[in-house]
Length: 171
Image (cartoon, rainbow, N blue to C red; front, side, top):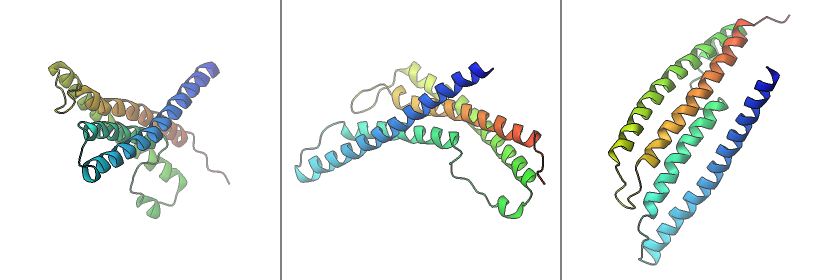
């Protein structure tokens, strides 16, 4: 069991570091392409065809990579109003478990619909209007994000559920 846990931890670390690296590089690349396009269009009056489409592609992948990492680290936007009114530690853990179960259900629905849509786009062979790239490259980012968000939601449900079931109040 320890070997399996170590293997999954190593895979998770590689994924997290890879996602973080792609977010940093993608953010820098997107910034450079937007600045370049503004300079070319408004200063030199010679816009570069396809640069806006490329930066949109990078942006959509950045969005979903960020969603994956925020789901993994439990840093996504959430309303914590209930924590003001619920003072018991066990009640907070149970509430957190319930919230993660709802997130998991939502991510499963998102995974299903993004997978269905990605498969449909792949089947049509649809291409982008400018550079004629397969649209499945950008649409696939939804499925990619949904897959890893579902995986990390499941991990968080298990973590919080285990914590809630094994909760013992320390005196």
